[in-house]
Length: 357
Image (cartoon, rainbow, N blue to C red):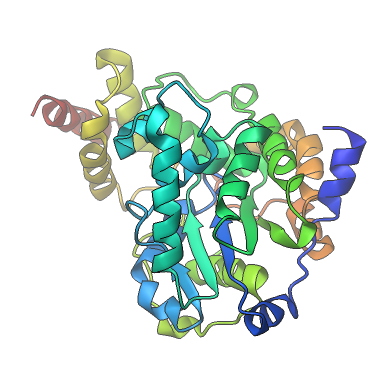
């Protein structure tokens, strides 16, 4: 990332004290699109808004219902009108690439109609940051939304790279990896910087929100940061329904080892079986210690990612930047207690049965 890009990212500040009130006075309509990043509480955020669609309407916010599911993956196609090769979003939606442009037109009309009466349209999908990899795709996405909304804002959570190690490794094991975790093999930092530059260069600073995600945030803090920073509103959190479970849960030592062994001995768990397997493993290991890094490995990771963390921090406000660059607040570091061999054997046996059923 060049100096010009870094300076432009450094100027991304949260300027919202009167912005929202001005919009309401002029009956302007705004779209706020949450694009992840992955492993920063995206699923929890989507669950929250899905549970509270009616409650947030009282604040003039509307969480889309015409987009399939809680994760609005359909949004990705707004930036892929020129693509000719089908991807997983095309398959999920059941739409051939050549039909995307006409389908987008109809969908945008539906979005405009369903969100009438609300000053702000909300939608969320981390696939926007992981699939729209070229700036022209992001520009097309924003331009399409501007056909319906006066203002388009993008919000993205960023997280220190060393805190992502465990989440990324756990995900890789669920996807079929059977190798031990290697710190120098799970970088991902270039991707984060390129995402910030790609989206941020297309928007005014007041419409590009880069928010810090910390592993010690509780569920209410995540939502409070998200809503307050992007809208200036301060909703009464006690009025909302809250999703069950952790913001970002991860497997225990034994659970992770059991799945890793399955991958090594029998191949990856079929995608259709993964939710059932994950639910079973989680239920049987809920009282065990979560998978953690030793102090030594965490220090190694902190040194490994120090430079890129400083670059990511330039996109934050000064106050957020200071906290972001402090020693990591993480529940990912602790004594490496290892796994329970007998429990791993039992888990492995049952997982094999689930895979065959």
